[in-house]
Structures are given as structure tokens and as C-alpha cells.
Length: 444
Image (cartoon, rainbow, N blue to C red; front, top):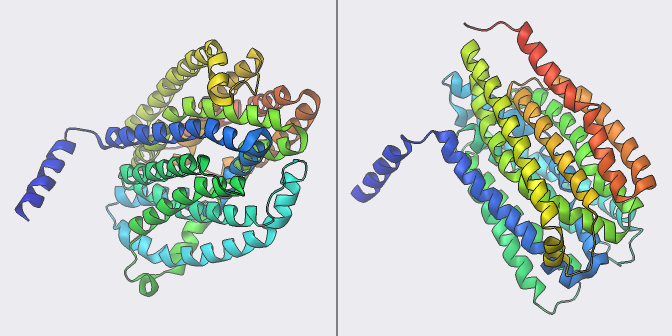
């Protein structure tokens, strides 16, 4: 008992020298590295086992993650911001969570029921153009795990809001490690129905650790006694706007695989998947910084202090400047190592032009800019504007993707994504952020 007390005191003393946001960021970097390595190592293993045609199906199903993530209904963001406000006001966050925990069990049950009823029709629509035959129950089972994982991912937002994001990152890291181990094992086992099993090996470990995280984050004692529908309803009034924003984001960022399944060959879908994961690996470090800074910015905006808010804006511009330089250098390195990357991932099965890589670099540079402003606006709880403008961007995205994708193939998909962001979010979000700040009153 004495040793345990001493260890706790040492931990508190040690952490007192490190700002908590840096501590969380460190765990975030570890998580992003593990996630990126899992995705990168999985590509050559899955390609060798499945072949290009089956791998394209794997890419399409796993590429639907933005749609599956809608299962949290926006509660993750809403709860995170509400906890940040409670912390600033010095109020108890555990009683708040206890009052809404029961309703998530109800949501999970009904969402799984609805998804299982539409999954067969969705699978037919997405996979009808592929030569690969798949089991009729593939999307029902795999998708149900994705839905459950998305619901449980609310716990990660809870950890971030409580400045304990290292827990969320630890559970996510364990999930990705489990997925990687499962893929490696399945890749070298002589099993039948390999596509279905590899998909399960990919998602089940992630779902398992998301569930453990959810159990850890939520205070379960007395959830039936202390559940409060009025509090749940109050959170829902913000959550549905976040969810509307997420739906629009899914139409912008998650519609690519849906449209490619109708327009592109298995070769081009596989190529897009490989280089998109490479650039997601590059993007991962910056997204970790944004997620870590979200609750920090939310608390500073909640103080209504002009000096602290000016610090946030300076930090935002500084981060964007470094991020653009970072993606430019990274794109140059990908261009130089193009042949090596294709040899490593595809063993000579695929080829790519320099133009495709440059388009990926431009697209992700724009993503750095847009996501930075989207994060700071959402940390202010100013989500109505985004919620009502993202659907416009979604319509533009779908139209551009279908038109340019049908006309120019893979190049057209990337051009469409770039144009979609350029004519909408690139200038709309910064204008909204600074104009609304100029109209608000703050404590000097």
C-alpha cells in the first residue's frame, strides 16, 4: 500500500512538469504511428492474399468508415464540449455522464437493428460491379462491428475532454495492434473465405478495445436510477447539429469509395487506397495535434478572455504554416520514392503517375487548412453554421466526383476533391471564424 502511494506521488510530481496537452500529444503520436504502421503493413499482406480484385472490395468496405462513424449521432463532440464547460465551471462531470449512459445502450440496440435490415441492399449496390463473389452476410456482420465501434468511440471524446486523452489513444493503439496481428496470422493461414475473415480480423480487435474503453469511461453505477432524459435531450440539441455536420463530411470525405465502386476499375481503387493511406500517415501527426488542442481551445474560449482567445488564433495560424510546409516536403519525398513504394506495397502489380501523387499532396494541404479552422470553430460550439453549409459542400462533392470521375478516372476523383474544398470550405470557414469573433464581446 505504501509503495502504491509513493508511485502515485511520483507520477503526480513527474506530470506536474509536463503540460497535460503535451502528455496527451505524446500518446497521440504513438497511436498515430501504430495506426499508420498497421495500415501500411496490412496493404502488402492483404494484396498478396486477396489479389487486386478482392483487395478492391476490402478497400471499399473499409473505406466506408466515415459512414459507419455516423453511428455516434454526434454525441461524442457534444459531450466533449459540454464536459469542457463543466470543468471550467468547476462542476461534476461524472454525474453528468451517469445521467446519460443508459440512453447509449438504447441507441446501440436500435442502430444495429436498422443497419442489419439495410445492409444486404447496400452490399448489392456497392459490390455489384466487382467480379469477386462475396457472402450475402458479409456487410451485415462486418458493418455491425463498425457500428458498435463507432458508438463506443464516444468514450475517446470523454477522455479528451477530461484531459485524459492518453487513455483514449491507448485503447485505440491496442485495437490497431490487435488488427495488425490478426491480419498477419490470417494472411499466412490456409483458410477459405479469406476476404470475409480478413475483414473480421481487421475490425473485431478495434471494436473490442473500443468497447473496453467505453466501459472504462462511463460511470455505470446507478445509471438506471440517475438517468435524466432532460440532460440527454439538452446534449442531443447540440449533437444532432454535429451529426448533420458529420453526414455532410461523410458525403465529402467518405463518398469517394462509394462513387469509385461505380466508376473505377479494381486497379484504380486499389491504387487510390494505397496512396491515400500513405498520405493519411503523413496527415496523422497533425490530426493528433488538432484533437489534443480541441479541449484546450474549448476551455480558453469558455473563459471569454480576449488575451487567451488571441493566443488561440496565433496558435492556429502558426500550426497551419508549419503544416503546409510539412505536407509539401512529404509530398516531395513520396515523389522521389514512388517506385520503391509501389514495389513494397504491390510487388509490381500497379503503376502510378507523378501527377496523381502531386494531386494527393495538394488535396491534403487543403485538408490541413480546412480541418484547422473546422476544429477551432467546433471547439467554440459554433456548429450551426458548419451544419448548414456542409450539406452544400456535400452536394458539390457528389456532383464533382461523378462528373470528373467518369471523365478522367482516378485523376478526376482527386481533381474533384480539390475543387470541392476550394470553392467552399477553404474560404468560408476562415471568414466565418474571424467575422463572428469580431462581433462577440470578451473580457479584456
